[in-house]
Image 1: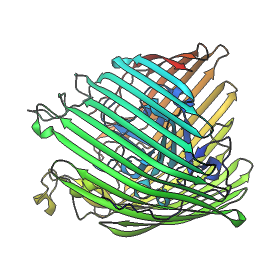
Image 2: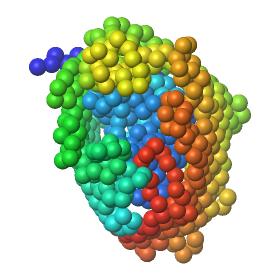
Image 3: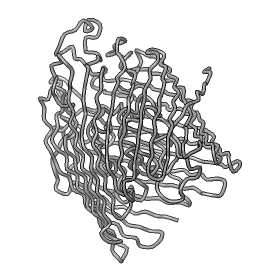
Image 4: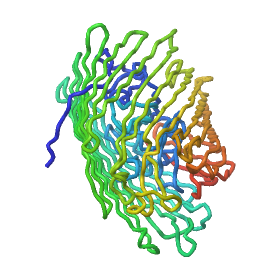
Length: 616
């Protein structure tokens, strides 16, 4: 039986005790809700309205609108789908769902697999780009994403059918009262898919169920009780390496993924003090089966538990101090190896929140059961030069302990050291996203050391190959990612809007003596552009066009296999019949572009979808 501990610590806060009635509210900056304009970091929020405008169950269609993000997927929907921020690997981006850390301790980097998500249960997606390890800890070296599930004030649902015989159904119901609000949402996706292997002919299908719910009850004007839960179950057909050639091709392999998570908590809010305490669990089970290859059968189990406290104290002279801390337990099993780890942390962040100047600085202390203590620091600032024009700057350090998989699996290396990073950024923004005119530009650099990579004993030799004949994880040394993000959104008329996001990232292996020194990191395109144009006609018809241009990249660390650049275009339309019924449809990849995200894996050609949405 665990003895659950809560450490006092801090997170960034606003000096004003009350939140704005309008405008975006964010939580990734501090762990507590605050107006977006008071957070000096680079944060983007995508709302439910935009998610429905984009259409479809595939969450990656929405994520392409976020600056500085890349994603990889091993084949069709249901394949492992990972997001990277500003050139960082997926394991360095913390993903929260309703505030619950959702990374899987049984995966290589402890990353979150986006394949377990569908847009039908999502109300908003909030992404903080850049490190926020002072508040969130080790996995926040690259960024923090918080996904909030839906609470409808009524009922709604949708059904969609299209390419690869994909059927998508969503439903949501809820109520919002003065003291109590609660909602439940669910989605179902079933598709025949296409071959995961680019050279294959057999379709690889996918079926997924997803349900989420959350509630809040206001006991008094100051005290509220909160709870949320989520369950996802999916089964995906996979391809593999069948005999006699043992090259990537069609197989009858499958993988099942089941994940559940939940959190209970209490929120206390007065004019000068805010507290948010909670206990969260995430539990996952991944099972792979290959009838042609018994060695392809596997079971991975991961579980994490977290007791946490976030707090905020308003101080005189427009200062604020945030306090809180956390204790984490994680465990991993794969049928052969198993292990556990614990980490306790406290953090403090002091901020000044003036009318034009916001400055914050903080420190965090982590104590890991295997790697001892570690201090990290961070600072952020923004200054309103003239009305709506803000100059931003930030510095942050990161610390990430090796995952249990990297330490204890059949490829594990107990001698691994934690990854560390130092990040810098400076930017300029005008207004806020959603305003008639919005523009932002940010330049950044992140230097990392003791990065963890995989050493293959099939292509090299090292002493550890004697006990790890297939390979092992090791610290490769230094790496750098630097780049530029730009976003411009314009409302040309009350019914015509456009948005363009451009991201440039240059990554480099800077490890002295490494054979890959000077090479780019794998699957990090240098250039990415996402553009959208939307028009709402006077007769209830809405039309939209999306364009995604991705530059070339390397598929491997040795930079020997090139991934060519590509451009994808989507056409969208919707028609509101009345206040209850809306028809919608789209054509994805209208030019039937052949492209590659991950070497050897297939991608979707042209596909059309049509659906209906109901509200009450």
